[in-house]
Length: 339
Image (cartoon, rainbow, N blue to C red; front, side, top):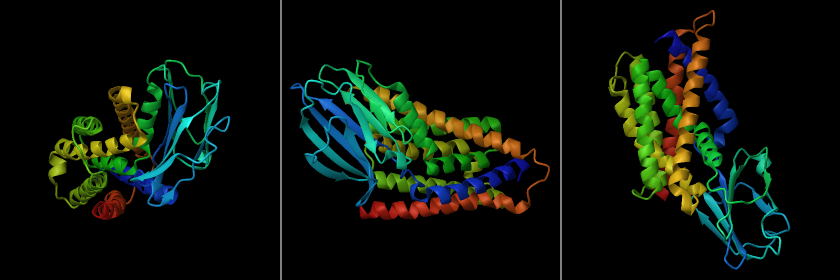
């Protein structure tokens, strides 16, 4: 056990405590973005689709508003989907003003830690796309033919990976298992290539997966890495230590399908699916690199402390990762079996 790894183990203990205290209900992508789509018909009237995260019969209280009271009526339909509640308003007459210049506001967003992707499309093809955040829960529409909002999907990708504590736990486990920098580069690259493949294939419907089953297998992959860490600290080098890139690639295929499930739930503009997919993936990679850089930087800084950590701290990492992933696995497997 190197001093660097021991410091990382202490870092994980602090992060684990913070995750459990502040984000227990959202430890595995329970913080999902909401989606508001406003589409103009050829007649000039509008349809509004609102998708908000839910868990069973429970839903985060988010209420969309469009200035002028356009949504201050009962929706035309209310439906439920796995992890989402869907409300639709059809054939809204926005008057001579139309939708341009109106303000969209999400009531309750400021009290959450989720985001809302907004997509507005006029009958002539002009569009506006943006992301609303808890600290900025409203926007005024100034629509012009802008095409895809590049920053919106990149931002969603970054936020998705940085709030996905299950995926980050897997990456952290790999960081602790791989000691060689060259091998670490190969391992991260293999993970990136793998989840990019299945992210694209699943989003473009080349393959079809059961989301609940995929999420449970993602949790199993993290548990597997935790067990490999225990074996390593006991002096038994397993398959992951000798071929970390192979394990990263294999399980990366599962993680990519999980990313795709989240992206599909958010919603994609029909005319820009390939580009939005690419931008979301770029955001995921940027977020992953940010996490790796932060862990390495903080770990290096901790090695400069005057006192060396006690030997027992090396067990913090595998047991913390294993505890979380074991809980996620059982919870998700139960969901998969019931679905």
